Image (cartoon, rainbow, N blue to C red; front, top):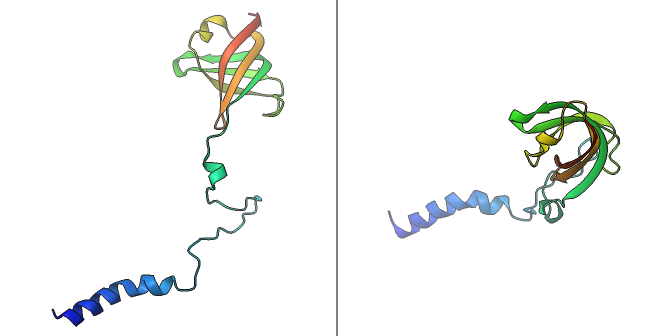
Length: 127
């Protein structure tokens, strides 16, 4: 292949990329969604790790799943986090299972990181 033929082959290979970006922004716009969300593109603010939050709530144990490391509690409203409801939470320390039984009532400390809550301690008022 001659020198000028190589030049044309290289130019043909890269021409679509060079022509496609002429005068255009390389930033892709994401259309707004009906849910009110403006963009799906992660930003610097979204890429930072969510801070850990600690909540204490009064609740009653409705189920214990020691095999999967979870306790289901029927809890009051957790101010700043969620309304009153019954739901399972992961247990941070397996020793907590020795402190409770189904029907136990008390204050539960819940740590929330990246949207996931886990019970870190329990102060049982009645078993």
